[in-house]
Image (cartoon, rainbow, N blue to C red; front, side, top):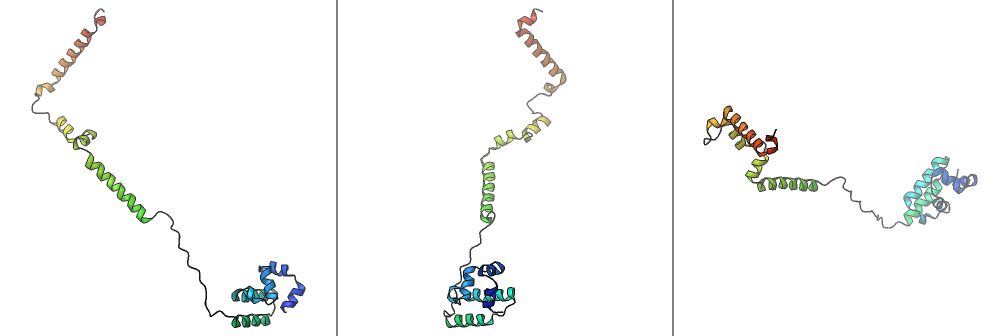
Length: 170
């Protein structure tokens, strides 16, 4: 089956729908206008038509090869430049910068805090614990006795009642 016989049985639109080849490319192939399509496409389209219609298009293939051999362009090829890959996610340098800034902030915080401020912020500083465990040498031991505490609380109650004359009338 030749290309002309395929065209007698089918329209260009039907061939295009079956082979997924653009109608403009099919028309250029039928008219043997090989200058409108490149070598690879022309030979590929011929192979597709042969496969889909069980045809022998060796004459058309030979014409195409002869045309492209006669009109070869010094064998040069134009290659496109590869596209650079886009980075996905966060950069390693960015993560390192964030980590360094965090370390610097922690270091700055600790160097700027005064030991007195830090001690007052801590719930159990060494000074507080030592004063609770071991009383100062200047204080008397009897100040810590239970009797002394009871007498101090009685004196405090007496002071409170004497400050309120209304309560004394009762």
